[in-house]
Length: 100
Image 1 (cartoon, rainbow, N blue to C red):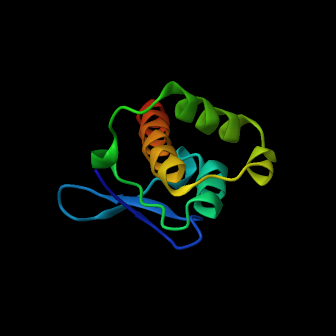
Image 2 (image 1 turned 30 degrees about the vertical axis):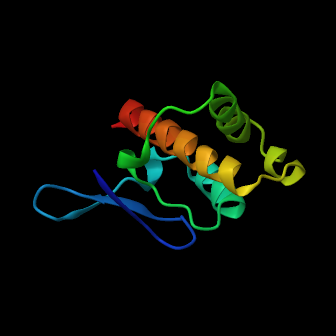
């Protein structure tokens, strides 16, 4: 699934098999996308980037999803940001699969 987002992540779409843009904004964890974008400046939503990472990164993403101010209290190095990006993509597509 090819995901396309606005720079501010307030609009998220995917391209169907006929290259029509389908709005899925209401089916996505928008607040989490915005938080992750602040942490990982070059965030890309890409299902192909999903690979195994340590459970702690999945826990951090879940915590970010459930706790609105959590991201303001933490800093991450480059490697951690890459692993958070992977965990975020898994979470994003899992949520999307639940809602479509």
